[in-house]
Length: 127
Ligand SMILES: [Zn+2]
Ligand SMILES: [Zn+2]
Image (tube, rainbow, N blue to C red):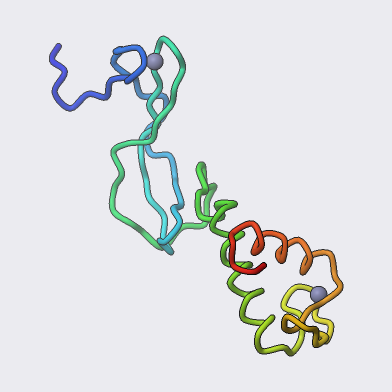
């Protein structure tokens, strides 16, 4: 059998085999769903998703792989929200309390605000 169109494990050089066809995947940056095939290396067990089909939107079943809510991405979005409210004030986007005015902009005393603030600090957006 030829290798054309096959997937080969980069660690072992073994042809990967299909574990499951038609797994449902959600990806960051896309509002719909994708069907793909799950392959696995018979030697080391490394799995990959390949053979993606077109995006589709009507679906209410189980999602096998959800990369839409990636931790990094969600964190960044929250940091963006934090940066905006820190500037404009108003109600805390995380707990709903009125933001207070401080030396470096508006702030909230809730735990969520503080954790996102720490993240913004780590990202180098505030000092
Ligand atoms: Zn392998
Ligand atoms: Zn708050």
